[in-house]
Image (tube, rainbow, N blue to C red; front, side, top):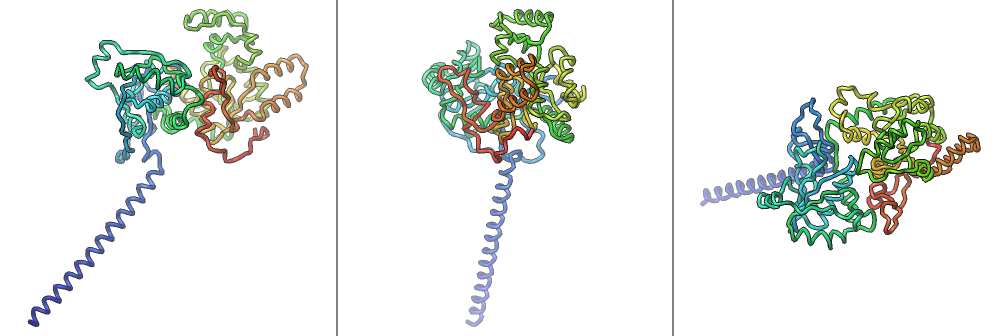
Length: 491
């Protein structure tokens, strides 16, 4: 009996020890879980490690001698990652109403905006979006990032399923959506077509979504794709960062987006300051392109309306009047200036620290992009959004998209030139009806509030081309600036 009691007591001790061991094991597991959860939360705050990105890819290989580089790609491609792939964000589950194929047309920034708009339309109509086609020199090498980064919003596939191949071979139903349309147009006019045909192809995508009066959720999605998801190829990103690094080492720098390329002048008909021979050359070029609808253009009338880019000589006086110091680095973001380096003589004489990408990067580095204007424009885009001040001489697509990106990045200073008033002031100054001090004071007064301040977009019902562009001022996506020190004397 005594032995049995001892055994029973001993067995109880063992059981008690087992319970304590279990408690310790349970505590260890809980502690490990907490530690892992903490690590996951820290990773989630690191976008390049955790958050997927929307990407537009091209180039299947990494041949450094290849000239077939795409425009947009992930900054952090999966194939180069040494760590495990990031966890996928939850997929949005919905019944798809059909497939949408799109062909992005236009230049770099037109394609950029088009991608954002097409994703937004697909999301609103509950469609499956096929990875967009870019221009003929760009193609998708690996669209996984693009697909995964927006899986919580819209289904995106690399290609149509095999069962719909007959739709392609028999001829797709293609159409250009009506420009500047609201979401109701797509709901009432486009969705029935997709339900009928199962697959719909948009053969034009530029400016197909309205600037204003869209649901806030759709405007926010346009921003998400544009500012947080789109990334340039690693090659372009690296070269852009190199240019920025060199400029930063030398201090403060201004980007002057100088629209004075031959095709720009020929298309617009703006010939102020050109010789007779140059004017004839530009007219000849304009008539050589049948898809340029305007042929007979009154250059001087257009200039007086503020519809022409300012010339390099005019920009020299404007920069001086704005108070840009002589020793400031001025990076010229542009294609080849019409008239060559001689046309920049006045600008260089006043601002000797003129810099271009060709002066920073070697011919070997620029070689792959040399004959591809969109890739060269992408380099200028990166430098423009990183500059201390951005000044466009004309409000084209790039100027407006950069303006919006700089607003999104914290209302970075962008001087929006009032060309109509500037032309009047410049002419009065040249006619000696204004002294230099009068000219300078007038220029500063005109632009004291045109420096990227928070403002509401101007909406003009029925005239969308004349109202403020969404991507120049995506007000629905902007927070208040951290500082209110917007003064011209900061130049």
